[in-house]
Every structure is written in C-alpha cells, then in structure tokens.
Image 1: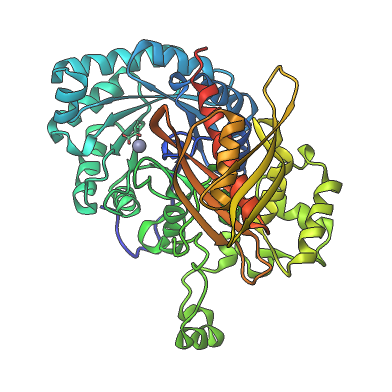
Image 2: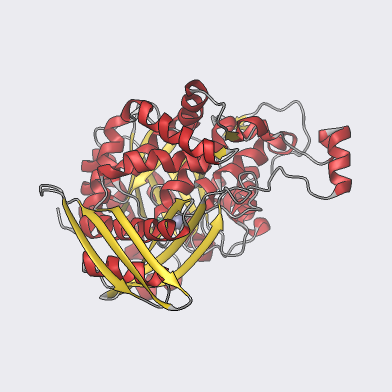
Length: 523
Ligand code: KIV
Ligand code: ZN
C-alpha cells in the first residue's frame, strides 16, 4: 500500500471517469433528454473530467443519439459508450462514439457465481471466451477499450484474476473492477485491487466503480486508490442505480484535502464542483440532500454557537476546506435585484449554460421581476428561469393557463389549458376542466384528461427553495403510467404560486415520460 504522510512523494494523476450520464441516469425517474445530456456533458468537460461515459447506446434510440451528439461536440474529454460483451452492443457503441476525438468502448460481462448461473447461464470458461471475443472485437474497432468484470467483488478472486488477464491480453487498456452491488469493505477491496494490480502489466490501468448500498462507495474508491487503482468511476452528487455511485465531489475533495495520505491529483477544477452539482440536480430532477458532503446546502453552514464562535476566530477550527474551493463562495451563492447582467452571465457560465442559446434580454427581465419579489435569487431559481426558456425545445406539454376554484364550501375544481408540441406537428392548445379532492388533485385530473395519460401519482413533496415567505415553492412529484407501472418519472416545478408549481412539476414528469417513450422507439 502507498505510504501515509510522506510529503516528498510525487503526486500520482488519477483518471476521473464520470458516469453521471450513464449509471447516474439509470437512477429511477432521472431520464434526461438529449439537450439536457449535452448540457451536462459540456459542463463535465469544463469541470475537467478525463472520461465521460455518455450512455449505453444499444439501450434505446435516444441514448444512441445522445452518445453520438456528445461524441461529436466534445473537444478534450474521452467519450465512452457502454456495451455488453456481445457483438451487436459493441458495434452499436462504436457507431455512436466513433466521431469522438478520443473514443472509448467500455464492454462488460458478469463474472460472479450468482450472475454466471442465474443471469448468463454460462460456465467459467465460457465467460472467459466471451470476454476475449468481445475485447478483441472492440479493439479492432477502437484504440481505447475498457473491460469491466461486473459484480467483481463477489467473484472468486483467482477466477477474477484469470478473467482480467485474458481481457488485458485481448487488448483492454483499462480493467475496471466494479463493486456492482455495493457489497465490499475498504479493507477487502484494497486487497482485491492490489491482487489485480499485480496480475497486470503496468501499461494497463486499473479502475474501480463502486456503488453505495452500504454507504461505502467513496471509502472503497479511496481504499482502491491507495492500493494502486489509477482510475475511479463516479457521478456528480453520487446519483446512480439504487443507492447511487461514488460521488465525484467526495473523491476529488478527499484527494485534495488529504493529499498527505493519497499523494494523488486529478484534473478537476474544484471551483466548478458546486455549479455542476446544481446543474445535474436541476436537469436530472434529483434533489441533493441538505447534509450531503461537499455540495449539500448545509455543507459549509455553522449552526451551533460554539462552532460559529470558533469559525469567527479562525475558519480552520471547523472547516477542512473552504466553500470557495468548491465554488460555493457565500457572496456568489445568490444574486439580487442589484445584480447586473455581467454577474448573471458569469454565474450562468459557471453552471455550464450555453449563453449563445439564451435570449439574455428576456431572461434578464424575468430575473428582475423575480428579484423584485425576493431579496435573493438562488442558483436553482436562476436555472429554472433558463429552463423555462430552453426547456421548450424538447417539451411536449407546456402550461398555458390555469384557473382554480377552491374553498371550505366549494368542490375544488381546475381549468387547465396546455400547449401540445409534437415534432413535425403544429402546436395545439387544449383546455379541460375537472374536479377533485383538492385543488392539486383537480388540476392533475384536468391534465390527465388533456394528455390522455393515466398517470398515477406516487409521491408529492413541497418545499421552499429559499428562505422567507417570498420564496419560490418547489414541488417534486414522482409518477408512473397506469399501463406500465415499471418505470417512475420525476418532475419538479417552481413558482411563487404553489398550485402552479404543482402543475409545472406534474408536466415536467409527463415530459420525461414522453422522452422515455420517444427513446424507446426502435432506430
Ligand atoms: O455497476 C456495474 O457493475 C456497472 C458496470 C456496467 C460497470 O455499472
Ligand atoms: Zn454501476
């Protein structure tokens, strides 16, 4: 293992492989459209990520298109496309990424006994044969191939070593060891990584990909770095399957704050961590928990008197890194009515918004109206104004008009008019009215009548985006479609009027549902 507290050692460069757009997007309800994925990809490149896993091209036509677009637009980062170890996946991944400046095919097969028996129905020998075939095919198409042994941490170690050696001999330049089900422990994972590192030649990079089922994804990734891993796979805000993936911000800042232990650097511009977190949360619809390390709202807030006293004397009493180092400098956290265009432009640029695509005059006007109502306009609120403008590009439903009637002696009723926008068709306005158990229910029933979608509400939450009664109300909904209950769709809406926020949230979830339906259509 690497030595601890050795100030003289040379820093190693750790490759940051971001899978927000692939594993992150597998998070229930988080489906994003192509424009949103592109926006995130550009921001990840700006952030300094080395490899961006843009998607799983064979999984849907939408994913294929998104990976293709990201590949043709990015300039610096390598773009990876995921493929099972089967010919059609690999050829499809290559088709999607071949325009990239630095394309990478990431192919995988499960190696653990349970996966071999229950899922693949393959013997140990067969899994090795398929591995070799897949890596050889991928290498014949693309100079940069990564191989993952899915569920590696529940695989017999001697067998895992055979598989990864076979993959490396067949041409894989990076061998990834995923803790697919978040099962391993730091001490055990370090041992596995040491063995894998020793089984491979130095020119092959060892990578890790940890899930957070036991809350250990970051700890396991860091243990692996100490044991010789040169690449970590992670996502912004730790989003991903089930409990998520290792969080990029946690790994990067751990390496930065405890350089004495790790002696490792990354290419990440840490000041862009917070704006990137806000952008991903906004576009994926997945809120960041308040006490989330590094990017949570409370991460740099000192509440206890004794802590506040200490911080006033010297910040280092209770701060191990500055908020500025991750881009949450207090003064820039919000903008107000005195803020000019320049400040807004700057903040939008930091959050990866492409200013060329925005009508700045109209955005500035909307900003001023909001800032007049409120003392502070937060990043999140600014982004929702941008979304109102940009989102229309791929929205199917847009709220045009809403009227509610409610009171202690009235049956709650709602009249809603929506603009329906379908590619290749003329936009149309449809209005419907409905009654319900309450104003929100009435409004959702009216929307269901218009869209013809029998959406079933799974969850409804409301919170104030900022402080004070002038705050924007933010509603988050989770819904399913009656005819296909297998998938959930998240939606968020903000407005100073909470019924309007509720309608906007519902429509944003329906718009995601439409994206998924579109993505499912065969190429
Ligand atoms: O968790 C996992 O095993 C994966 C692989 C496809 C790398 O996501
Ligand atoms: Zn994964």
